[in-house]
Image 1 (spheres, rainbow, N blue to C red):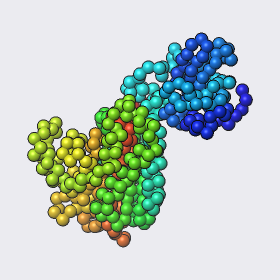
Image 2 (image 1 turned 45 degrees about the vertical axis):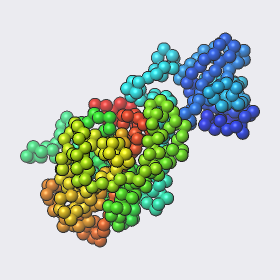
Image 3 (image 1 turned 90 degrees about the vertical axis):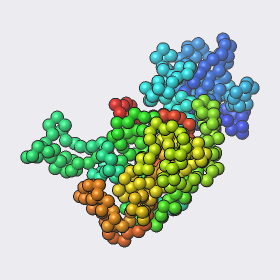
Image 4 (image 1 turned 45 degrees about the horizontal axis):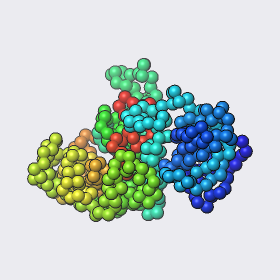
Length: 465
């Protein structure tokens, strides 16, 4: 077969190329036809659209055509023409076809029939070849790019925070331990405790649950930073909203107080969703047709509405007086559940909501105490269908107040000295938030299970691929 520069399928729909010979390469989605002519739907992952390859069987032997089945990988050279048939705008009249790799139809699992999302999770190594997951992962890429673009264009610096850490940012204790000790022969001290001096780092270490604390150090020197990387939570949670390994975006800004933090969160989310609407139209339309007819409307709803800003105390009052029967009880001091958050967004306000000023008991130690002594300057952004999509706060900049909160919660001081130093040497007001990237992708794609928006989900008892 002659060598030609490859044209990606996404570029083959360019009308200026009609009438020229091109070379496309990809995987066969379907092959159909009669004894004179065959139609091959070819896709290379660059777009949701397949390119149709028209094969005049008088020009090819049966031996050449037999292995071209669903899943096979081929290279096609032919003339690109405007399609005469319905359903596609362009097609290639094949001159030559080279088989790169066959896919035995008796064992290749992605045949031309509907597959459940549950089944596709079992073959996560192959599911990106389906239309659904091609669309989801292209959208995921565009959103990741938009995050970097948003912050770069606004003067933020990308800070890489450690994945291995000796501190527990959230104080929740659900951390994966990192060790090189022989678990079949763990060294012990005289009193029977694990002897971590023999471990790689010489002390207990874990995978990070958040880059926030280190991010604060960056903000207190570079002014405005963001982190974007994997985080790990060892919670034994099997809900459609939780993963053990997920990606987190965490901006941290010196001199921002809670109002500016809310402004940033709202502007950031609207930018990302607008970016997806502008750059992922074909994929969004496909997901809307297949899974969620209201998807594009819901994305526009977020972009076009001002977010309601509501103190927690008022939110609880609205829920208590709603007359709605909730599965989980509502009272002042309760950590609101997804059903409560969604009621406020979907039923009551019919707008995204930023809930503020939570009771200090249900929030992390680093949040700035309000003058009432009971609530902190926390903020959660609540979205339709998702509930909480962003959690953040103004951080406590007072050394004395932060120290007393650390002591109150019995957080080991030996792990926190470096964090407290930012309050001892040139402290300043500062704020930030965390956006769970997969929850954003879940919202933008309309998928209903978080396992379907990350290529290889890590959940309890599941570390396949």
